[in-house]
Image (cartoon, rainbow, N blue to C red; front, side, top):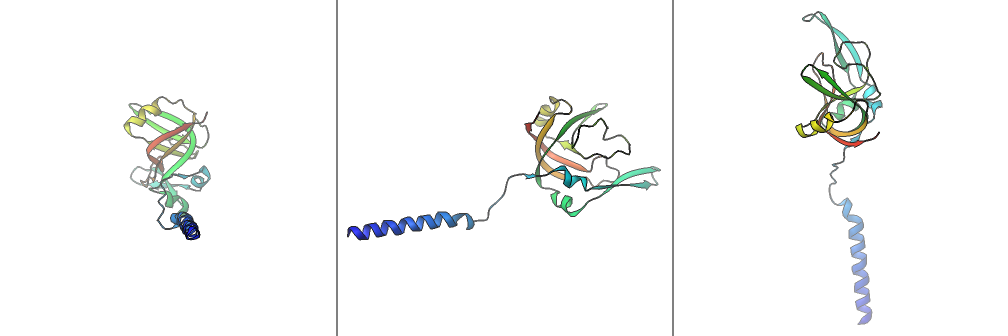
Length: 166
């Protein structure tokens, strides 16, 4: 009788161990973690200037590869240098791969990788307190701005400051 109890306990232990081992593979795993994106992916965007007969000037357009297109609408995480640009009553927040003094809304030939940040109202107050050229890590929803002549092809909606790195 004592032997049957020990065998039953052993079988129960084995059953529980097998269940705990197999359980993660029995359910669909949902990933809520942001995908880490590095600037090398975004550098592959090819900037082309096309002549626009309406404005009688050249407008930037971008040729994007599949890797960038697949990021559209995805939650991402990225590190970069913060910059605040003030244009009259309008303020833009951006992050760049490197520290730069180039205005992203100005018409110039320099192309540097940057993402325009579109934070929620409460997060705007956080970004207002940051100094230019602060290295930060952000999360948000990556979107591609498809408008012809857009100064910023990459947007980060619901941008959220994760960490200040310097």
